[in-house]
Image (cartoon, rainbow, N blue to C red; front, top):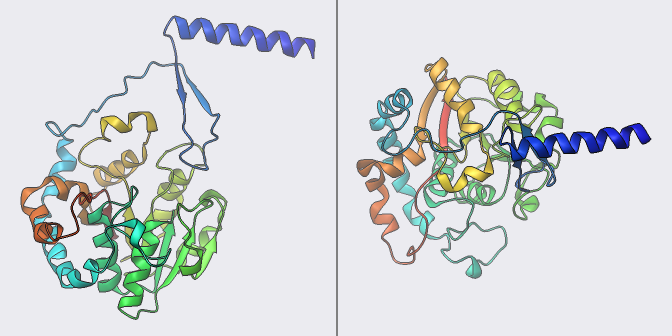
Length: 307
């Protein structure tokens, strides 16, 4: 025991010296996800320059070109969602005025407006047999409304150890475990036009949920399965005010897109759409309607289909 104490103090002195000499970085992770302990500190022996590499002025060129070539597809999909305009306007713009805790609201900090529109639109139009979520909350409520409004038989499956909202009552199947501990055979149930909605820890680590998604789940999905990955800003980097979140998920998606552009069909890259004058104008009149003042109407979802 005395040896361990001496070794511990020696190690602490060594780390302290390196910190002072700027030879390492300490990265402390906030409590954003179950996968990372609130006390986790990563010691990096190579200094980091945490800054946007791909900016609005200089996005990733190849990914920008890849996304840009499908603008007509994005516009047609968005236009098709306008037929749900009246049902979408039934959704409250004030979270204090919703009648039931399971009702969606535009007034939330997690799911911006365009993303809610697209959940409702895709569920309503595709009529999936399964809507499977990795990470639940406001998205579940938008999907549930679409299911009810259209009298669908869609089954909602929620995989999330700690949902951001009380949604158990509107789910058909509940798995309150970290994704990396879940039997992945459940993803074999997804067929063409079924939806896999991913909104998890957003961080790539050994045995993290994101690693599991990209290395184990996506490669086993059947042709025609629809995938949504949230908080994706491609062809741009994560915003500068998110630097301390240390998100890395979209780099995995970018690697997929660059390595094999034919693996996915890009359906809607919502952040890109939010920055494109022509595409964002499709829902301009909707967001200009009375009651939407102050509602964030951009998007951060990236919708794809397995080819």
